[in-house]
Length: 473
Image 1 (cartoon, rainbow, N blue to C red):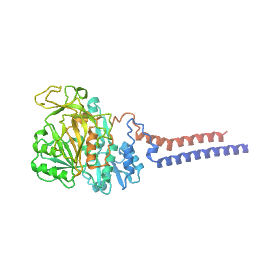
Image 2 (cartoon, rainbow, N blue to C red):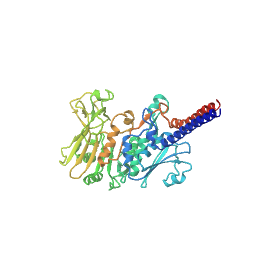
Image 3 (cartoon, rainbow, N blue to C red):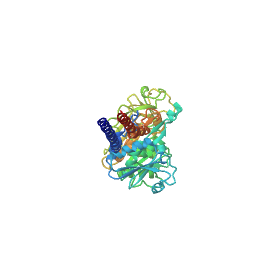
Image 4 (cartoon, rainbow, N blue to C red):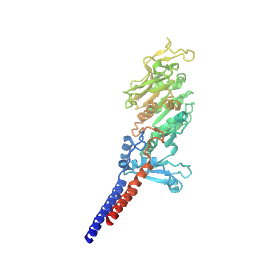
């Protein structure tokens, strides 16, 4: 009997030892998993890859040469879990990135350090800071209400731009020389829309204003932006632009179909090798948004021009009311013009647009194809320019109505071309309904609790029951 009891005790002790070893293994395995990078322990099951970062972002992060701190701001215990998991992927890519959570109520010293102590800060806002500069990203820039879908479905559906905003901020705070765009004012220029202003900021450009009537073009102006002036330039203002170009300046110029009447401005264009003719571009019906509106159409994007050669040729740019850009007979030989946006051979320039409402071409109209976007480079002065025959390429109405065209890409690529800025990246905004098919961080936390705590306890309990039954046989 004693031998039997000893055998039972020995067998039960062996079972308990096995349970303890299994428990120790599970605990050690979970500790090890917690030390692994987030990208190796989390699987993104969302349709739009909400919890992933692109190869472009990984390249930016891995190329960092200085320390950058990313603060995720929110009340303690209320931090945005979508952003928290995304930022962990940034942290995985480089030892230069340091992700921290910042309590907006208790982190006053940090907020004051960066001049944000008086700001109204929403949960889910982000602060990106290096030794040189900082960039604050409000939550409203990360989660933007999709008004088109809201009007269609009457429910709140958002565009998510977490990766785009954070990656842009990383470039901004670590770039030594931020390109400066000087936008000319004082001639009733067409205002830039909120969408393109946001894109310019996101592309890490600084935008300022210059009034040529009262000041000169700053020496640190990387790009001079002229956006469809309604009033003519004075001779002195036009000379300031010419002098700037002669020094190797960079010009981004949007024209309107009415600029052919502004003599000084027209002469400035001729100095740039471009002739404006009276007229509005009409396109053939199969390229138009609506056959009865031939002035609103889809234009061809060149696959060989420096601005657009890297872009997909499976889509078009949408153009709303444009004039044509023609090569001036006075163009100097050192200046090379390269079209990148053109209409088809079936298009034409409607000359008598005020009185002639016919859709088909007449004898007074000028035949196509017609250039409505071109680049220019002068081999002597070093001057570079981008000229568009329309100021509406990146208007809010066009960009919102036709988000899948190349319009916004062309605009930002034009800026990058002018100042040879190769650090700007374009991360697509993710349009989503957050209530569908999302692998939430809370789900991951629940899985962690099950594997770290519940499963070992269950195994231990089963082992104890087996041991107890064998002991009492």
